[in-house]
Image (cartoon, rainbow, N blue to C red):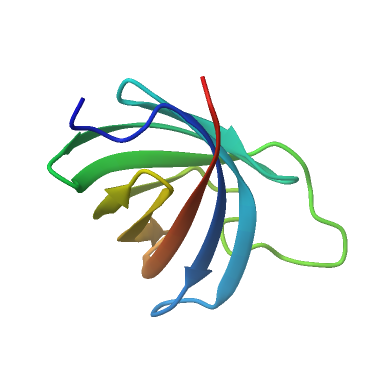
Length: 116
């Protein structure tokens, strides 16, 4: 074993330095691959994990326009790197996304919901 649990996770992300924002969605983690999304964006990426620590890269794409709100990542393909820790019931990651010329720091909490 020794890695992140394959399955469906709910995610909550808070942006800090470089921008303010909050997002929720779902992510599926399977054997080093990431796929997921929310009402306006979808995500793809990859990760490696061992001994309770993990790291990876995630790219965010907008699939639907937001009405009455301008999302921080709106209209942009944004790639970010992350590092964090994991346990059987979830994980925490932090990282930086480059949005145009602005670096946006974030922290995301993942809660395990269902195994695959």
